Amino acid sequence: MSVMRASFILTVAIVLGAAAPAFAYPQFQVSKDQTCTSCHITPEGGDLLNENGLAYAEQMSQLGTDASFVNGLFKLPSWLMLGGDFRGVTGYSRAPEQYLETFPMQADLYGSAKFLGHFHVNVTVGYRPPEYGNTAATSIWSREHFVMWQQHADDNFGLFARVGRFMPIFGLRFAEHPEYVRQYGGTPLYSETYGAAVEYIQPQWEAHLTGFIVDPLIDPVAHDNGVAAYAEMRPVEHTAVGVEGMVTVGDDCSNCMYPHNEKYRGGVTGKYYVPAPDLMIEGEVQFVNQHVETYGTNQIVGTIMATKFLPAGLMADLALNYYDEDLRIKGVDREAADLNLHWFTTSHIELLLTTRLELVHFGAGFGTGADATPGSPTGSYVLLQAHYRL
Amino acid sequence: MWRFAWPLLALVACGTTDDDRPRDAQYITDTILAPMCGQAECHSTFVQSDGVVFDTYEGMRESMIAPGMNDANPNGPVVGPLLAFDDSPYDPAAPQESLLIQILTQTTDPNTGIDRMPLDAPLANADIQLLEAWIRGPVADDEAPCGALLACPSINDQCSIPDGETTGECVYYPQPALGAECNPNANGGLACNDDNLMMCGDDWNFGALVQLCAGGCEAGACL
Image (tube, rainbow over all chains, first blue to last red; front, side):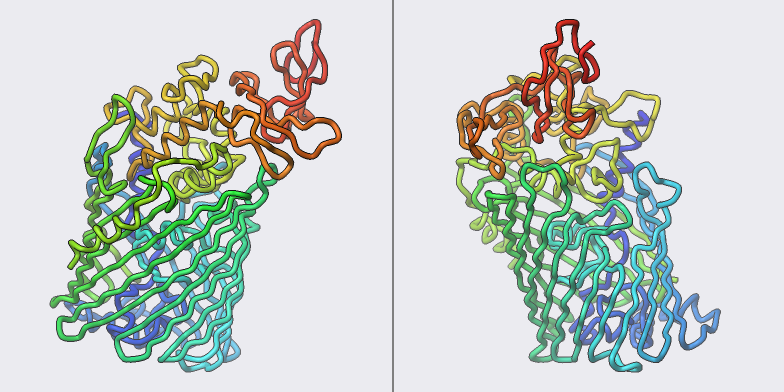
């Protein structure tokens, strides 16, 4: 195997990694509790769990161990919370080249300090792919750091305001970043950036408004300034309906023929939990209008996922993804079906099997001229992930 | 119920067969290359896997005409330029022979030392054909109107604006050979095209003739 081939295997490993920085599991919202802040300390979910979240982690896992920081080995002061996520993966992919791969995926430490009753400082520090030409200084990076004010010091509801570096709240925040509504839906991997958010959360509804800018400190992943809004209503128990909008203006080019690259996103989300079969169904669809100066492109991106909660700490997801990069043009759509099996063995350890079959234009084939390969699947993987929550 | 889901989605995927998208570098970058190839872990400005950047227009242009790096083996063969043709100059008449199109379309064991890209799933055929058309140059778009805010749709066209006017028409102008890269941000925008000292346009093509160098031209200056 050539060194160059090894390099690309590493690249595909990162591409296919089922979840880099862990977000929340939106599968748990309205099935286990009403809001993200019911279990997490920040409105975006993910990262650190509050007492209720720790209780759910213990209850959901097969062995039901102590879910607190390092299994309760250290007693932290009440104003301080610490945690972390570590993930590694091994598996097989075929696209159509075949790879066997094993690689670390995430190593993040979280800290949250509460001060003056209503304020928190949240910092996430961990590994990420280093910046080109600046490897030594950027392999370890603070993906998120922000100051948060919350109206009620000891409550999970009410008004929140945040300033700093974080991911805007927009749509379903699946942990698996290859889900199309994340990959193509405005919240791709590592696109956290600086911004300010105002958020209001009640059990029956919540609303989030975030303004953000291109990261001024490091080569950005998202080259846009913009505004994102997300609102969700929960009119009855186990049901949520959301609307979303995002406007971004590209800021990636000082020497372009066209100075503007604008994107307008609008979409809806839905979450519905059926208690009897213990089944969660959730989905998101976005319509996107992109303007590269005079030419407008209309796109659609959507993901629908059904989640079945099983005994012994098991949870199974079946997801269908769809993305059409230009609705006017035939053959530029792609589809992916995902089947994931989570096994929460202890409250700190999760094993996750992720599989995907991805097609372009429903498997219409690939290639041009003599190299065309009609009707073949165009991408697939089976990956086993180990996740340890500190 | 799932068996009904994809056929329903298929109804959405019914676009037209006429691909009238602009054969334009920035359009292709922003709508195809950036979302499909310029993801954070790959050819982003941030990571620049193998020195190739696809998430910005300028990075894309540079990656097309300049040699990339070899992350795995700094002393090994470089990647690209993506518009190279087996060490011969850029040939818009044969886009399928370019390294870019070869990497995107190869389905057998490649002789490039690079696996098919993107690694997780290929580009749509229509997108590859658009890239080929962009490289080939739009003869049909020759004489299309253009101006300060309306660029010519092809890498091989440049806007010819008469003196005193604000708009003009696209004129077919073959991309220079790779050894004669034209960078408007370097050397005061001056570059050599054979024995001609020329001003580089904002579209990175040669623009106005500055001087005919009797003794030859090299490194953006008359000898």
